[in-house]
Length: 330
Ligand code: TXA
Ligand code: MG
Image 1 (cartoon, rainbow, N blue to C red):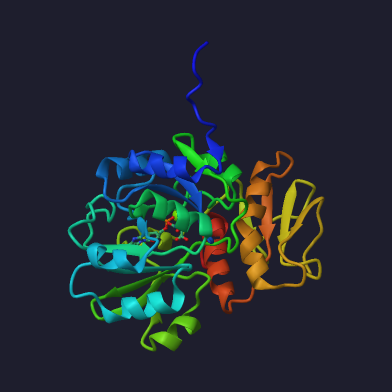
Image 2 (tube, rainbow, N blue to C red):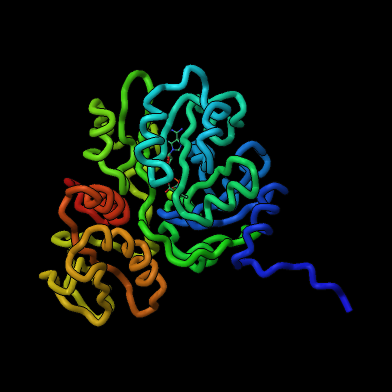
């Protein structure tokens, strides 16, 4: 009898996942935000496989995930901005990515040839254990096909990506939208991508922080998470008040809660019990995946949320999901 050496592709074997990473293979793993598609950040060939598996353009740099503050000195160039330590102490482990000038140890492919690298210490216990066991920094973008919906479960990853060696299953992620990206560059402290850690929270630690002035176009690319169209399901998405047609039986409705004043349809998902925006964020991508997968739904209609605290990050993702269906003037 032939010996069975193939592992099941999805599972909870951290030692195997860590071994895959050390061997230059790709491992999808849960973080507290979304699932990441990880590879050894110090191995350019392994990192190249991430770009191929995601069909990600090579100009979009990757975040390097660490499990210990001791990694910082070898990943960042000297002198290290003292605000890195302040931010790390305040928000790590957690959903904050810090962009800073990189050290020579980081291969250029990780940073798309740029001189800066984004680093983050995730708080998900499986992510921390995986990185620790592997003993290497792990480059990981969200584990979706480029431009499509971010994955908040192992099944979302399996649906989109074929070329993954192992999917470490940790159930649904808790926060549900990607980390806040903050850049410490050229004397400025800017939020490049809004996330669960808000401007207000950061300004208590670093008063000079500001939102990135302009959401860049592809020509003036600071951070492709800032592209106007991103995080999109493969079906039309309309924001509340911008819906051109009538709601029919083929329209999915994604509403904040059952108390929302939105039209009813056969396919309605409520994102929270009573409007709590943390719950809305946690369930948002999952609801869009659900509508994407439902063959009876041809288009979806999503209720806008108030742009306060995590609502800023939610509306950022919603506008990008709906971008190609927004009226020209908006
Ligand atoms: O929550 C998250 O951040 C998840 C989990 C897996 O950690 N990761 C994630 O990675 O969302 P990704 O690649 O999908 O999004 C990272 C964003 C991109 O918009 C990228 O352009 C930006 O961060 N980014 C990464 N490195 C950067 C750098 N050096 N300068 C500017 N932007 C950078
Ligand atoms: Mg992404």
